[in-house]
Length: 156
Image 1 (spheres, rainbow, N blue to C red):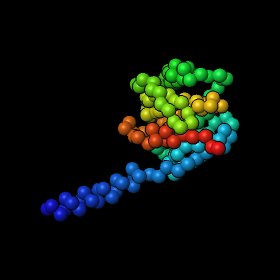
Image 2 (cartoon, rainbow, N blue to C red):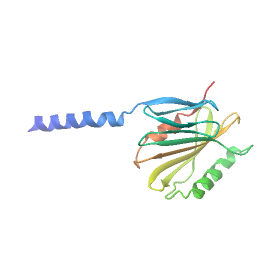
Image 3 (cartoon, rainbow, N blue to C red):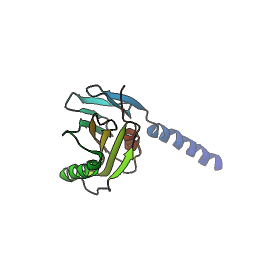
Image 4 (tube, rainbow, N blue to C red):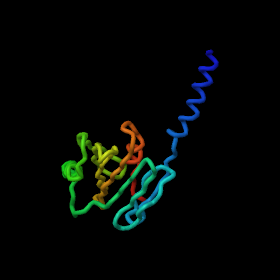
């Protein structure tokens, strides 16, 4: 009996692991020289000066240049909250600040229609540019959107 349970557990682990171990690969929005890691099976839907949109059956990632000149780091949180409210994001988390090697950022999570979503503003530390990032996904406890967001960088 013990061997049957061990074999069943091993089989379960082998079938679950590939789902969780989906590789992330670097993708680049060449118009503005920003890159990030995204699921390896992405489809590029838009790669123009208007935006960079990639998707899989599980994730939909939008990156756009922040509009308006002179957006200051101190304004990021209130501006992100405003856009999330305008987009009618429900069950919004509080806005949290974070820092990446090349960006200052703010983020919040909530529900966009029926999907989970992560909204973020990233402002380059040298103030050369800023980006709006939206990631919609299915599972509430999915950690991959955070991994995607934390991988943003400017190409050199």
